[in-house]
Length: 214
Image (cartoon, rainbow, N blue to C red):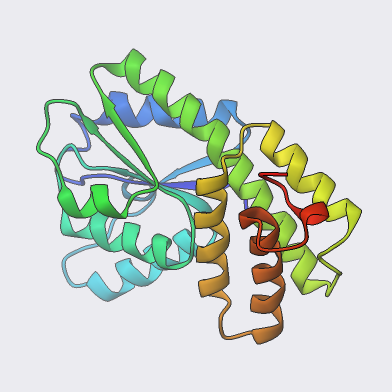
C-alpha cells in the first residue's frame, strides 16, 4: 500500500489548505500517494453512515494516517483510532500554538508541532523516512508469515540488521512488531512467527540470532 491518509478539519479546510498542500507535496516526493478525505467526497447530513464506511475503506487501503488537529474534531480521532487498531503508524500534527489534544498525542506514534509551513515540511520529511522503514518492515514480515517461511535464517537476520543500519530503532521496532502480532492474533501460526521475529529484536533468543545487543 503506497497511500497515506490525511485526516483534517472539514470546517477549517481553507485555513489549513497550505499545510495540507505541503504535506501532500512531501508525501508525493517520497513516492507515496497522499489522500485527503475531505477533498475527495461531498456527503450530505443524511449520509453519515456512508461517509464513515467510505473513510474506513480508504484507511484500509492506506499504510499510514496523518491527523492534522490544529482544529480538533471527533471524526479525526475516530479515523486515527481505526488506523491505530490495524497497527498502522499514526502521525499527530498541529500548529505549535494550537490547543493540545491529549488523546491524539497519547495515541500517535509520531508527533509534529510546527511553527510555519517550512518547519512543517522539514518535520514531515523526517517522519516519512521513518515511516518508510516501518512500512517496508511490515510488508517484509507479512510476506514471511503468509508464505510460511522460516524465521531463524541468515536471510531474515541480515534484513533486520540492515533495517537497523538504515535507522530503525529497537524500541520502535518492538512497538511495530507487537502491534502487528496483536492485529494477527486470530491467526495463531502467523502470531507465532511474528513473535519469533520479536525475539530476535528483543534478544530473547540465542546470541547468534540477536539483532541488537550482540
